[in-house]
Amino acid sequence: MGARSVVLLVLDGLGWAAVRERAALLPELSGLEGGTITTTVPSTTSTALTSIACGAAPAHHGITGYRMRVGGRGLNVLRWQSGQGDDLPDPREVQPLTPFLGRRVPVVTRAEFRSTGFTVAHLRDTRFTGWRTVSALLEHVRALTAAGEGFVYAYYDGVDKVAHEYGLRSEVYATELALTDRLVGDLLDRLPGDAALLVTADHGQVQVGPEGAVGLGDVRRLVAAYSGEGRFRGLHARTGAVGDLVAACRELYGDRAWVLTRDELFDDGWLGSGGGLAVRGRVGDVVLAASAPVVFVDPGQSKEAQMLSQHGSLTADEVQVPLLAGRGRA
Image (cartoon, rainbow, N blue to C red):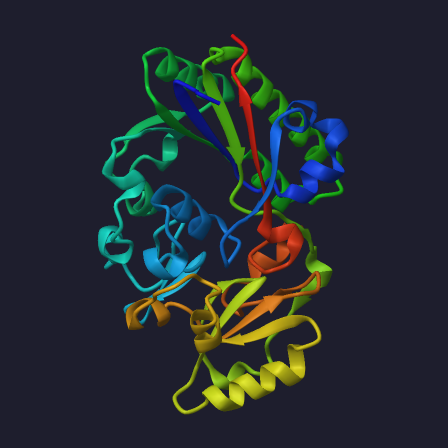
């Protein structure tokens, strides 16, 4: 396209299925060039955003899910919190790669993310510009491009938030899609003709609802700890119980999930190449990757099951995301 500058806009939660099936609500996005690409495994925000920023697969950068086992403790990656006190791991050690090849890229994202551990993990040493309203997001991107920046990274999370709370069949979700499409159009209207806008996403969504919650009481005696999230549930076995846990999960849940061992995930390349022992240990001995519209509930995280749409697994609706491009129209 011969663009002088490029803006990469990441729309959290906007899967390719939504772009294809809701085209009438998305005239701006539908008018862009491009198609679908595949996101990371698991198809979740913490993993995919790190891969976008670092240009690496999860096995390489080490952010293997929404919740991971790090140093024998559970870590909520997005919140960078552990339920076991304040002695948290250093984000630079958990995720050692330098974002954007070490370039001090301008990043336009939510202002409240400025000092979080996850921001340090996947956006450290960038030039952070926070927004609290969509109008600020638009104007920050416009000003940075007008100032001659060759590349700007921008992030918007409205689709994901609304989908989780209201589901994919609600009028609120439809309205959010239309507003997000308007955001894309407004951004194109503010970019000059020699600037390119690239639009992508971190994952799609699957409608689940509380009726899709699957308890894990039948295998609880074999499980020492949990990781991941409802549609990509990691089960860390008690000492000596790995074989029994694998067999039990395949018998009990094999009709609703791909039941994968840790070795299968890493050795078969689902998380990309690499992955030392420390990174492998962040994932469960067994992973339940939901194939049906269900979530596998961690007994200590029961609120997860209340979200109406979810993601994380390997279905097309979750892993297929857009990569679309257009020229500025200012």
